Length: 424
Ligand code: ADP
Ligand code: MG
Ligand code: ZN
Image 1 (tube, rainbow, N blue to C red):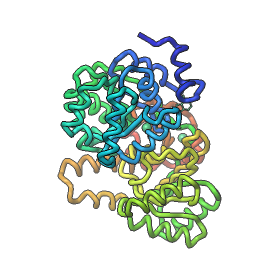
Image 2 (cartoon, helix red, strand yellow):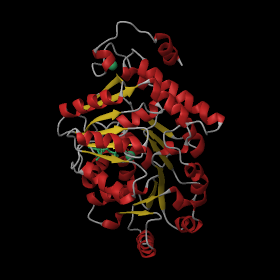
Image 3 (tube, rainbow, N blue to C red):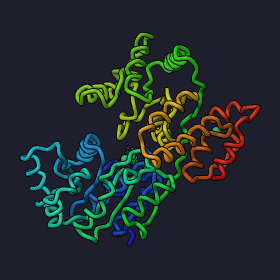
Image 4 (spheres, rainbow, N blue to C red):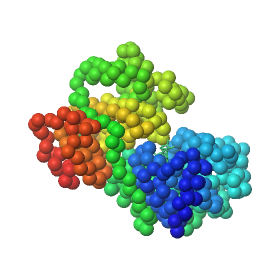
């Protein structure tokens, strides 16, 4: 039963202050409100959160939102609260809360004041929590970043694999909403299988990001590459950007060299203590630094709309990663310049990193790397190759927004390889 359109629009205005839905949002929300399992595949920045937040606010009971990162959770709860006059409309429940805080959250839930509860997968592994949820009226379960279920995804989390059995313990009648920005067919089928979404309504949005410019640059000697990067940054003075590198040491080195060349830059990686990381993330969000040089530990859930460039100093380990990482540029729909430096040495470095892994992991990794290499060496429209990777057919003579379209190569040396990839 579709909810009357006017009621939906009123709720959208009342709760979020928006005048219209984006893309598939309205259809998705109707699917959720009708109690159906729903699978949402939408690129980063497409507006997935609203797809479950609005129905949660409109439904009786409280929705459980499974989210992989604690930092992400707080951010989301703050956003929902920001729209509401009541702080207890949204809460999170994870290991960072004190006993007293947990008690308060539980009291609000029992009193029916809370419409959205963000939980970590670990929260659901605790029997006492499951027993508590069993007694509550739960409207639905949303599994955000659902690709964490799949080893083919870019952020596999083993705990995600156990979600379905835990959800079933709360109730086997709860509608499940899975959301991801990962559209590779392998990841999709893993999600469907794992969460039992065979009967779900599936909504797939286009993954094209027309405002992103994609470019591959050959990586030469270190000094030259850094000079090239500095030049690019100076041409984009005052703009924010992210530079991704393969390892922690390189983030520090590169940040130091950028600073020495008059660029405001800081390094970010998982080896820094949490307060330094939080501080540097804030510096980036508040524009106290132009550039953050980071490992892939940085970025998930960072909602900075005006990132103007994403530079990969090393080739990413998969095209999926590349799409996600470059996806942080231009979220406001304005310019986003994505440059990837490519050298064969870096490919070998990636291969070397897998040396201690199992044979099957190495095979999986090698396949992902080969696809990235094919992308880097291709003379075909970058956008076409990326979208093809997500199973999307992109018809274009000239997208005008990638190096291959703007400066077509005369000779296509690696054509065979690319043709093979495009047919696969
Ligand atoms: P995703 O989770 O898909 O990456 P988000 O849910 O974080 O995307 O939303 C991205 C941005 O889009 C947010 O700033 C959000 O406020 C905005 N947004 C979502 N829906 C709408 C809408 N209907 N109208 C205007 N802005 C929207
Ligand atoms: Mg999201
Ligand atoms: Zn192109």
